[in-house]
Image 1 (tube, rainbow, N blue to C red):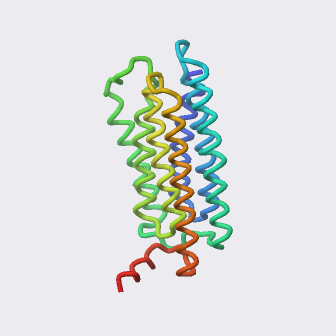
Image 2: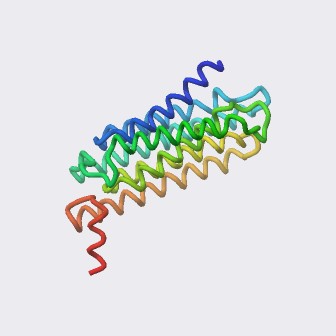
Image 3: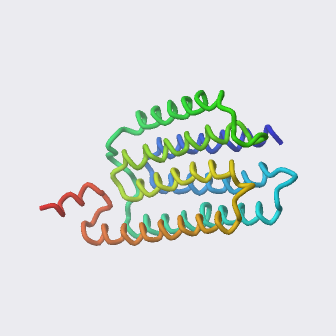
Length: 215
């Protein structure tokens, strides 16, 4: 099982780099949806013998419905309605952004390799994956011009926080974790409404056009 768990963590990190390198927004949405599906598997493969089954199932199903289905569907619909398909001119190029993401992941793995986990028995890649994924999410938020790309960055960032939360999943009630997922769903729903308003007002989802409101 350890080999499969290592593979899941590595796939999560690979999808981080794919989103950073992709100019196609729909491909990025599908990658984030796939990452959400992988995160839904993590509570199951990381569950110990003493873990409450209902807790694990609730967390996995919540992550699957919200991260892999609900939010990607909302983003795909917003992208389709706005007729925006590509992030053409990011603030930082796709290759440099991917290189920065890869460097951040390597540093995260190196930095956390010698740090003892507060809870014995947890997978050593938990914290590294969390930090690396959060870093890639921040890069997306800072370097993308389109609102959809920035929302994808927010989702990737939250995925990193979700992975870190698995470190303490044995001590957190399932309702609290499901509540966090629902808050995320509500936040992205509001972001979708904002994107529609930007598109209607400026005929574009380029967030730099919002600077014209200063005039």
